[in-house]
Image (cartoon, rainbow, N blue to C red; front, top):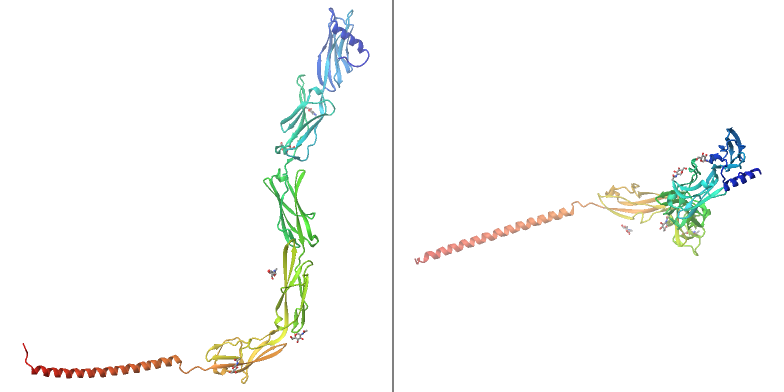
Length: 538
Ligand SMILES: *[C@@H]1O[C@H](CO)[C@@H](O)[C@H](O)[C@H]1NC(C)=O
Ligand SMILES: *[C@@H]1O[C@H](CO)[C@@H](O)[C@H](O)[C@H]1NC(C)=O
Ligand SMILES: *[C@@H]1O[C@H](CO)[C@@H](O)[C@H](O)[C@H]1NC(C)=O
Ligand SMILES: *[C@@H]1O[C@H](CO)[C@@H](O)[C@H](O)[C@H]1NC(C)=O
Ligand SMILES: *[C@@H]1O[C@H](CO)[C@@H](O)[C@H](O)[C@H]1NC(C)=O
C-alpha cells in the first residue's frame, strides 16, 4: 500500500520493500500510531510518527492528504490529517545517521452513510397470488464491504445481502402477493456495520411503501333485470352482484344502458358487492339496448351484459267525429295506434292488420250511451302488450213513451196503496206528467198513493223535451171492496148449518128413548100377570 502521488514517493517505497525483505540488526525502527483508523469522509485524524533513532536526521509523514504538524519532540512528530475524503495509507519514515531509511504505514478507512435509500414504487394494486418485485436503490454508502441491504415487510426480513458495487447499488427481491399483504408497509434498510472498528452500526431506511392487494373472481357478475322489454315511461329494475371479492369494500360497480351511466346504489356485504339501479327510458332509446354491469376492483374488471328492448307504446287514439250528435247523423269512429301495432275496434280487428281502423254509423236512439272500445296490441320479442281506450257517444233524440215505459191498463183494488211507474226515454231526459182526461186531475208518478173509486178512469200521459212531445193513454180500473168479507160469510153459514144439524139430532134421539121406555113398561106388566097364575115349586 503505497501512498499515491509524486515521484519522491518511489525511494520511500523501495526503502520499505528493503526494510520488509531485509530486516537487519542495528536498524533504528519507525512507528506510526494509530496504525488503523476509521473516520467519516472529510474528517480529521491525528497520526504520531516516532523512531527508535536517538537523533534522527529526518522524521516525516508521506500522504496526499493535507497535513499539519501539531507538535514534535526529538524522536516523534504529531501530525493532523484534515479533510480525509478517501481511504489511504500514510507512511511515516525516518533516517538515522549511517543507517537505511525505515518506515511504518497507517491505514485510514473513510466511511460515509448512504445519501439516498429508496424503495421503487410498488404497483398501485397487486393481484393476490401473483409475483411482484421489490427494488431498492442505494446511493452512496462507504465502505461498501461493510454495507448490507435489507428488504422488510413490516418488521419481517424478506431478504438481506451485501450491498453490491456500483452507483447506485440495486437490490431486488420477488415476492408473491397474498391477502395478508394488503395494507402492509415495505421498507428497504441499509446497515453500515462498523462495529469491528469500534465505531458502531448505522441504519438508514427508505420511506415505507404500502401495498394494496386484491382478488377478483374469474367469472362474470350475476346480472338480472325486472323485464327485458321495457316500455318508454315505465320503470325497470336492474340488479348486479358478485361474490368472492377481496377487499370487497374497494369494489366498484357500474351499470350502463346503451353507454349511458345508470344512477346506481352499491352495497357491500361480507365478500360480495351488490348494485341496484332503476331504469327509465325515453322514446329516443327505442330498440335493443345493451345493458352492461362492470365490477371493478384493483386494476381488473369483470363484466356481464344483456339486452334490453326499449319500446314505445302509447295508448291508441280513439276519436268520434262528434261526441254528441242528433239522431240520424252520420258518425265516424276512428282508432289509431302507434306504428307497428294492430288495432281492434269494438272487438273487430282491422283487416288487414294495421295500426288504424274506422267505422261509420247512422246514429240512432239506441246508440245513445254506446261505448266504443279501441284496443291496440304490440308484439315485442314474442311478448304481446295491450292498451285500450274508450269513448262514449251521446245521441240527442226526442221523447219515447210506450207500453214498456208506461203500462196501458192498470187494475188496482180499492183501498190499496199503489205506485204509478211511467218513465219516458229521450236525450235530453223528457218531463212526464199524467192527467185525468175528463177531470184534469194529476196522477203523481213514482209516489205510493191510496186507491179509491174516484181514481179510476182514462189518463193522458205526456212526455215533453226540447226535442218534441209524445203521449200515451193509460186506463186505471179500480175493483170495489165487497160489503162482507167472503170468509166471514162462509163461517157464519157453516155455524148456522152446524146449529140446525145439532138440534135435529137431539130431537130425534129423545123421541126414540121415550118409545123404548113405554115398550119396557108394557112387557113388565105382562110378566107379573104370568107369575101370579102358577104356584112356586120350592
Ligand atoms: C403502514 O403505514 C401507514 C402510514 O405510513 C400506517 O397508517 C399503516 O397502519 C401501516 N400499516 C401497517 C400494516 O402497519
Ligand atoms: C443515515 O443514518 C444516520 C444515522 O444512522 C443519520 O445520521 C443520517 O442522517 C442518515 N442519512 C440519511 C440520508 O438519512
Ligand atoms: C239515418 O237513418 C234514418 C232512419 O233510420 C234515415 O231517415 C236517415 O236518412 C239516415 N241517414 C243517413 C245519413 O243515412
Ligand atoms: C283492455 O281490454 C282488455 C279486454 O277488453 C281487458 O282485459 C284489459 O283489462 C283492458 N285493459 C285496460 C288497461 O283497460
Ligand atoms: C185494456 O183493456 C181494454 C178493456 O178494458 C181492452 O180492450 C184492451 O185490449 C186492454 N189492453 C191491453 C193491452 O190489455
